[in-house]
Length: 232
Image (tube, rainbow, N blue to C red):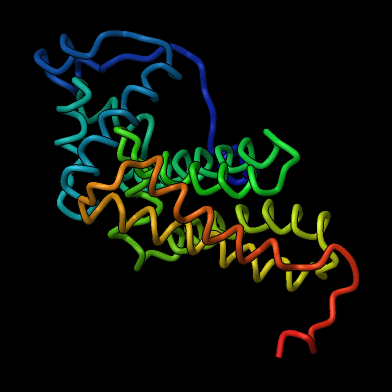
């Protein structure tokens, strides 16, 4: 988890609807629960609404209704729709980075690492939560804070992969980072195309095809003495 996203995690005190502002119907439907639990419930509801409608078409009224709370309760946790969206984006980015990190550390065989990394992306886009849409298909890329997060998640994953390449080949860090970001691009674009095009190829076959392509390319780099002139 990045420090920026970790800093946004907070609170554990109980809360509930304010009957003087929420009205009798809203105050009775919002069951009192611990703050962290309520926040998680609101994020789940927002995930469903944003996934179904996109950022611009979603309204805080819709999210409050889906969560079964009043708008005042929703605004207690998230001051704006953007804050709510960014919280979901942070969680989605953290989820993908953690999945790739686990894949890379699960084995010391580099061919298996490539397979596990590709599988991490395909599992991410296959998730029923739909969280991949926040990372790969955001409709809010015009916002600088969203662009920064989308750029950072690719950087974080590429850094994880580059560290392995540096350790296991003679490639310098900069060249390793370029290969790493290329592998991220291959995994991301292919997995997005696979899930969006409705291909009949099973996920196991899809990940096998793409990981074989990636491994046949990256395994050709030397374990000692990198000479850039030999690439021409």
